[in-house]
Image (cartoon, rainbow, N blue to C red):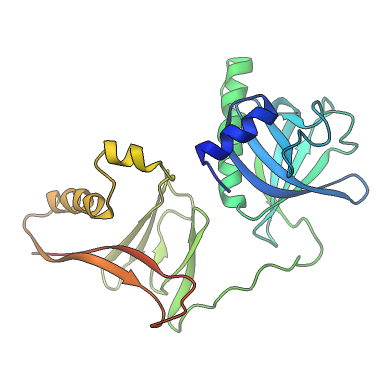
Amino acid sequence: MSTDRLALTALERKAEATLRYFELVELFWGDGQQHRCYVCVGNHALFFVQRSLTGLFPDAEAGELYYAHIDRVVEDTKSTYNLLLVLNDNRNGFWEQPNLLVVAEHRTRLVPMLQAAWQTDYSWRLSKVAELPCLQADLRMQHSGDALFVQPFQGYTVATHEGYRFFIHKDYVDIAGNIHSGSQGTWLDKKRELTLTVQVQEPEPLSKLEASGSEHIRWVAMRIRQAVAESLTSALVERSAFYFKKMNLVNDIAPWTGWEVFLKSD
């Protein structure tokens, strides 16, 4: 998945349209036919670009799937990556059947992008407001081999937000019911009177971050700290320092860094 501007520019030359997102996917249609290509989210259509960047798949006409030809989408409840596009009768003749299965590793990112683009295009075409029907169903009789995941520690559970998966204490409850507003998710632990908030922001070029004073995570943490402190009668900063997380001393393939802030209030 990516919103990288340079990569999108290269794909835009093949699609001959403005793009906002792309991802490498596998398509399944007709009687067992399949093909791996890039799916690109444009202003008025989805574009299927060959992996070799030689053009659209299967051709310039069928490789441009207009949002007006998509009736609804269905997310598979037995996997985290199967997505069914249900097409209407106005679709290109290459797509023999109305069902087009898209296997996308980052489905949780692709679907919101598709929804936003479809709804914007609908308003542009018909001067009306409508939402893209997004349903959930079992698309396959058996589990299709989800990737293996590390299980949570004892006393913890798995939480997911914006495509990210992490462990939180079992006493935390998703107070938004998995329907988070924007990029923020919130969980509440009533026993300890704790609130966990997770925010996920879109990647941005470093030049843009420098212009907004966000080139270092420290400055972002400082603004969040100030926003939290304003709601308190008094606040004492007990810790504000660089944080490096890894499971062991060496050979950790998934370390991450951040800025740790501890506030104490009355």
